[in-house]
Image 1 (tube, rainbow, N blue to C red):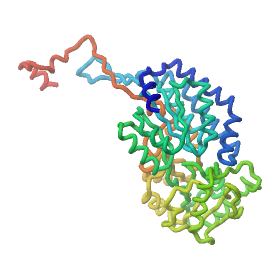
Image 2 (image 1 turned 90 degrees about the vertical axis):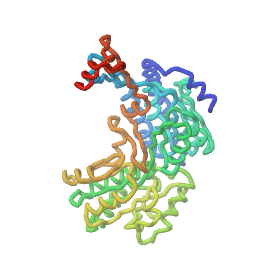
Image 3 (image 1 turned 120 degrees about the vertical axis):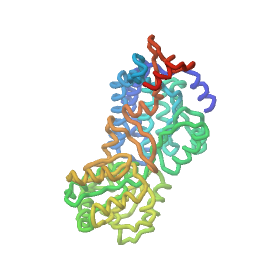
Image 4 (image 1 turned 180 degrees about the vertical axis):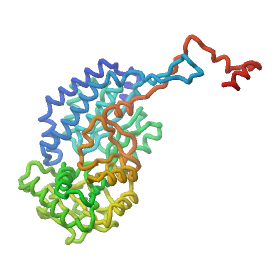
Length: 451
């Protein structure tokens, strides 16, 4: 890896025309291999809904690539800034420049999209790229390597396969930027490793993303959206709703509405092709242990609690205690706690007392409530009256804050994150700067005092 990185660092930035051509070829190649992508991911998961892969892996990746192609000419233009009036008619500008070699470390939950979207940003900015896909989705990782080899030469994009040891070595390379998507504990390790070379990082981490439901918001509408967002990919989504805060007088009705929405979404769960499995036995065991620590009376299971292979049914948990592992850890699975509160203010305090989430979801039609939650909470993003779809907006930066991450990408924000925004000063032919330089005669001193 070190030899490959040294070789790539010696090469110039990819020029703008070639960037656009590479991105166009990447989009065509993804479309050509979409069936292989669906099959590889499903096999890595033991079963993954083909529709979820089409939506979250292929469609979102293609839209990000096309958005970058469309806007790239505007993004690369120098941004003119006015100079201080004392230096008129000199000019200033901010000129985007490729950082060099960007490292992308992708997770297993969306193993294709979370390579392709950061890659699109890095190539748009003119960088060369090294990629470490997740070892937990080996078939997808190999397919990614094969697809990218059709588009890029090895000195433009280099894919590294391997286990955790390889990932650790990868994060210790003297890269010019690292974008890591994964858990908060691993994110801390990546940041420590990168610090050795002062490598800047973009960390897309997780956290417990709460859902707040206002007292007058229709529960059927909220439940339909929550079900769609929580059980997409069986809850294995960094921005999936992690727990719900609802007024105690509405909790029973919400449980009923969620149960009804689940039964409509997955009418025959045992034979349901659109309900994804847990990634592997280890994660399945972790989730069953979270449930084992709870009172069985707290579980609301519309399809029962029996699991087969790596398929875990949706399970609602009625008021788990704050100190349980379920409420301390990011769930990352098809389990959803429902916490009752006495007011929206109590719900707000509950959220503010915990680590800053990657996303906060609010269901409310009252502008006063929306404004209060927007102004008094700090989260990577805020989604109002819907779940998950904020990720698919190319115009919105995606990223966390605090324990849920640092930095962001998508669209122009991704281009800027992968660029050095170089400050450039252009001195005009008319140059009177000598007035502020030695030797300081009396007449110069008078001018300085006047200025």
